[in-house]
Length: 223
Image (cartoon, rainbow, N blue to C red; front, side, top):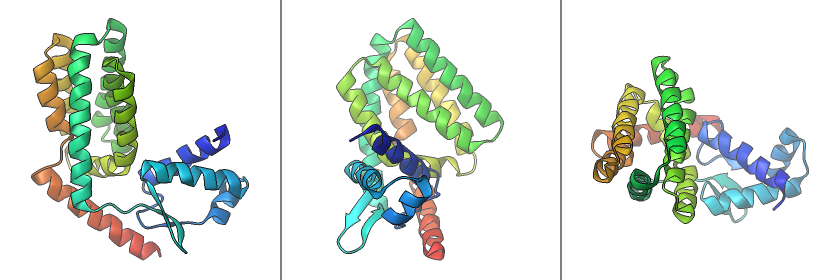
């Protein structure tokens, strides 16, 4: 795959994450090629990459569509995400460097600013940087790759979660607990905090189901 295909993958992925392309939306190669000012070949390659990530499905006679995920499947994905991040946090508690800790604190400060401004979109990106800083601080490249790959798949739904009332503020408080544990080198507290932060259960599950239903309605209206 060339650099153009990769940049197109990122652009389309961003539109899925931000809700511009809703679950079930047909991705027409000709329309996308026209919109991005490219030929169909790199579009086809980008869609193939997105299919490999699970964000796009290639269906017979219909072509590419934005993947639709059931609530049960989504809960399973977040369960695995929680365990991957717990592993990252456990390693980071032992291996994080002063420079990496400074990077994590800077990401945390960006989260603070976004939360204070009640800007869930800005918080979404700051939140990603916070979590990715933890992946890197674990100093296990394979684990970090797996965490980033799954993070890409759950991006649209993490964004959806952050639009629930008061979730941004609560998320920031949970980040503080994780950061404090990592600064103290307390692996068990870091693991417990990040696992609780990521996993979807109880009221968070109900909120997510409601958000998915809203997305489905929006997709139906858009057709």
